[in-house]
Amino acid sequence: MTYNEALDYIHSLYWRGKKSGLEKTKELLDLCGHPERELRCIHIAGTNGKGSTAAMLDSICRCAGVKTGLYTSPYIVRYNERIQADGCQIPDETLARLTEYLAGFVEQMEVPPSEFEFGTVLAFLYFNEQQCDLVILETGLGGTFDSTNVIEQPLLCVITALGLDHTAQLGNSITEIAEAKAGIIKSGVPVVFYGDCKEGEEVIKARCKELSSVLVMPDFAGLKSEAVGTIKECQQFSYRRTELREAYLQENELCMEYVLLALPGLYQQKNAALVLETVEQLRRGGMEISEKAVREGLMAVRWQARLETLREAPLILADGSHNPLGMQATVESLKQYFPNRKLQFVFGAMADKELDTMIPMFLPLAKKVYLTAPAMPRAMKPEELLLVCKKHCEKENEPEFILCQSSTEAFETVKKEEKDEVIVVIGSLYLVGEIKQV
Image 1 (cartoon, helix red, strand yellow):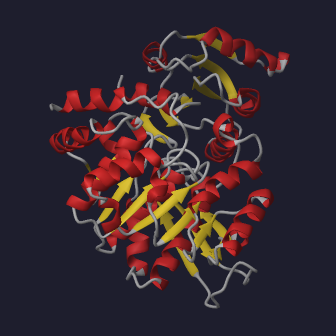
Image 2 (cartoon, rainbow, N blue to C red):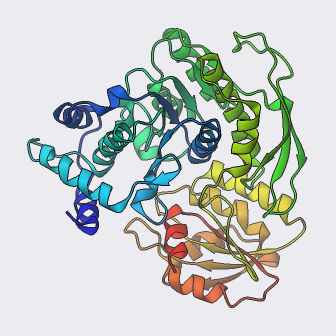
């Protein structure tokens, strides 16, 4: 196979109509010799912050001399982004070779795997080939029935912030969503949970108690923002566990002062606190990670589509906030970075998202909104988006709306705005991915 032939094959493995469960992933792993059994993994689930948390952990561990594998989704521009070893994306020729190899086993299956199931097994093969010391494994959707959940005994389970998203698949309440995410918890395996959510905390605590798993949660009362700076500067924070909470079984104090974090967005400080607690658990498991490696890793980390700067003069930022929890976090950060200032937005979203909740969050900041649609069947058309936006506008303070039939048209238009404008691409990772390719 060529690289393009491999991508065509992977994308042809459509998931719709297939039953939830791990059977197909397990069957394919059985056929190719169970490469996942040779890997040491940190398994990450959650609604928001999974990718950023995974990227921070990957950066810190590499700075500590650990050879990492990193599996994330979705990709923004190229499929290879999803599978990285030691900070480098899987090479095109390797992806093609492993796809062709796995396709031979798929032919032996009565029902083929989905694209995500196939990609997960391919990643396990690659990480095994690369002899990765540690694999940071992000779930795609949920937890219980996510194909990554074939890992039988991870080193740690990490659950990031919980909120409403993918409700058709996971449930319409935080409790149901927490139950799906808690499906990654394994007997006796320590769990690091973001918390900050009463309903979710009850579910995670109950599951940990049932499975005799130690539960650790960040103490956000001990998180202090020292300096935010501009959108292009490192932000600085300190983190000190201020008290021993019920969830803590250890007695030592965790303290990190004046930490520089390269990722913009105030919400990333909480994700970083979660990462610091995760690193502490890795240390307790015998992994050597110095404070120097932690500081260097957080200063070096990069992650796409999270208040990412795409262009300057005019300043164009991209944030893939596609659910209410993510949108709220992004809007709060924009208010901090650009106080008392009206911004411009490029907005496109999938029709099945919580648009009546998300749109009123950013509209008060907007003086102009370019409404567009990613080239996806699920995307809401700009004309329909306009009707939703109009419902939530204050008549005396309504922004200007401009309809663009494609992301390319929207991006080419906003690039011509005045040089001192701030423009934020928001609402969909698919939209960000398309605009980054313009």
